[in-house]
Amino acid sequence: MPPVHKDVNPKQRQYEAMVRALSADLYRFAFWLSRNESVAQDLVQETFLRAWKNLDSLRDAESAKPWLITILRREHARLYERKRFDTVELDDTVPEEAAFASPERSGDAAQVRDAMLKLPDKYREPLAMQVLGGMSCDEIAAATDQQPGAVMTQLFRARQRLKDLLGGRAAAEGGRK
Amino acid sequence: MNCLEFRRRIGAEPRSRAPELLAHRDSCKDGCAAFWQRAQRFDDDLEAALVIPLPEGLVDRILLAQATGERRRQVGMRRAWLAMAASVVIAFAGVGMLWRQNDLNSLPALAVAHMPGEIEALSLTQPMTDAQVEAGFMGRATRLKGPMPNGVTYVHDCTVGPYPAVHLVTRMNDEPVVALYMPGKMDTKPGTFERDGWEGRQMPLRGGTLVVLAQRGASRGAMDAVERGWRAAIEGPAAQTIGRI
Ligand SMILES: [Zn+2]
Ligand SMILES: [Zn+2]
Image 1 (cartoon, rainbow over the protein chains, first blue to last red):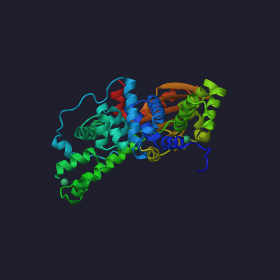
Image 2: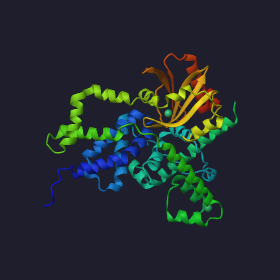
Image 3: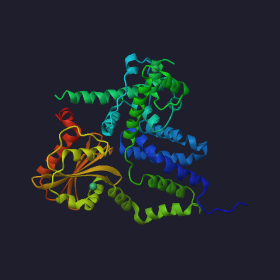
Image 4: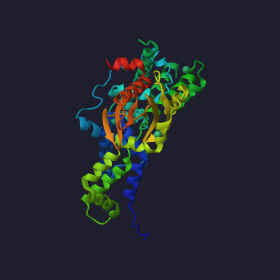
């Protein structure tokens, strides 16, 4: 007989470790999804409660983050009662000069955050899934019910749009009206 | 793989370690290695910008909610210490405590609580150089977009509650006015407050939040001028005319 641990049980321990490891990224993802701090807090709270109830369905610790992000997106969609990614872009071609435009370094976090807030949902969401959630194109595609190619295009355009927003502001200031 | 395809894929997945991408990067003679470098730096900046400060007690609140829910569901003895700790807090303090907890984490409370540690800063009169003030903002990854206000007597990298901040004091007609700029503290509702002998106002500002504070009795004019000054410095004169007509 193994010694009896009057300690916290393994499930509880697994859960606490998961909360400690992933709540920061999950909160940040929730913020960039909802653009609202208190909504983001509620979403994270609700997501972890659901995760606790369904902890048995989590296969391995590796997949915990995409799994939580999927739960959170569902909660967010429920909150707004509208389907995310409802418009599927058919135009998959990328203009050549856009593909060759070089990403510029901005170095100004405030400016990047402002641009990110202005990004349309269909770009901001997959970008946050990739950058904060560490998800690959294929994982995002699976989570959002899309083709990987379509996600690839959204991610590409998301960055192009960010660069436009960042560059646009710089140009406006150069022109000081 | 040709250059167009490489750039298309790096533009979508800059962090990809796919062997065919790395092979093209290392063998291309048409500048794809440099393109890759720039893409990495862009994503470095993007990652850094998305890392906004966390609300205080996030982990504790999540664990408390779970423990409380558990307690309700299974009135057993297991997990008793956690669940009981939670229920004791609720039973003893009830809603009042939770409200107080929230209030203590509010922006006005955090800003005012930050003041005593640097109260001497209010009596400094030696003006800072523009370079010193700029360095203070650069330390928080913020570039000033417009001319800075006159009479800055103090600048310091601080942390206000959970929020990284630039702590500034400006003298207006010999009245010291504090400004706390918190980059990444998004989504602030504009408002004014009075608390523990301080008058203050909070407002969202480009990529962050500005709190202006002065000791009770300060003139409204001085606070207005300081608010205007920092808004123009942080957002830039262009942004101000576009946003505020
Ligand atoms: Zn090439
Ligand atoms: Zn300070």
